[in-house]
Amino acid sequence: MEYEHRPVMLEEVLDGLRVRPGGVYLDCTVGGAGHLRAIAERARPGRVIGLDRDPAAVAAARERLVGLEATVVQADFRRLREVLDGLGIEAVDGVLFDLGVSSHQLDTPGRGFSYREDGPLDMRMDPGQGVTAADLVNGLPREQLARIIREFGEERWADRIAAAVCRSRPVSTTGELTGVILGALPARARGGPRHPARRTFQALRVAVNGELDGLAEALEAAVESTRRGGRICVVAYHSLEDRIVKGTLRHLATDCLCPPQLPVCMCGGGRARLRLVSRLTPLPAEREENPRSRSARLRVAERLVLGVAEGE
Image 1 (spheres, rainbow, N blue to C red):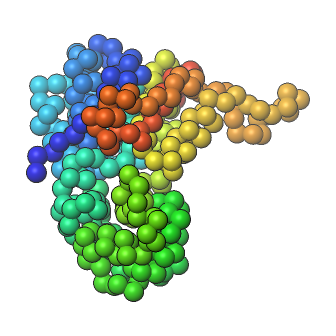
Image 2: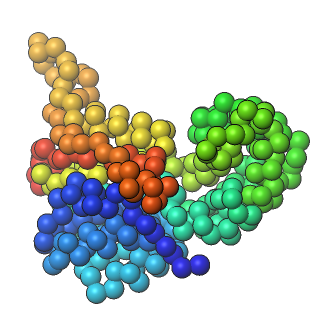
């Protein structure tokens, strides 16, 4: 399947980053390069760098960025400083994180992300990594599986779903898992506009890919790699990741809270490194045209003080 990607809140991201000609910009989750291509075109003759764990995304992005000053690397965003160092880039003018799963991954049954299409129970963003969703579904004790579904999916019926999964093992496909989930839920939980398997699939995907692991640290590394006046834009799609983003940016935007009589900072705040700029959601027209954008939240912050690369 061709790697399709419809960038969410594209104009808002471009405005949030304040993309300028000649700038250097980093997209930590390149996907199909929808955002990154628009950034690269606006930044001419500047440079853009894209990261992604998915080799299919990397290949598609490289193809779509032909003719532009762009470098795409297969890497987790937690390695962003390592990648920039390897490219000889000390600091950038803006960083974008577009978190979550891509439309291509959802729409390719063989990747195992979708509860609407039957396929192998995989869910790995990087097919080269070890653990699959099938490994978790069929190998974890009931209590541990329930905890994943409850904590990463915020699913109130996690215990019932986990018990049903354990009774149905082995579960090999997304279709089988969806059927087990539907059978485990009470009738009142199967109605509504959102698919009743959505939370469980989200939980397994987050667990398989460690999506929340190191997110705060990666955001801090992005801030440290951004020049003064540069922007950090983060698009989050569910409350778990948005909570981490909000907390991290707010912490980095907070001055020391210690009493003035203390000789050194003890609270860990120090000098504020960011200014919080805005929090945006998609316009009604975009939500109508692209239903997958409905839960998106874009947070924008601006670098206030010099980064390490600039001699702080």
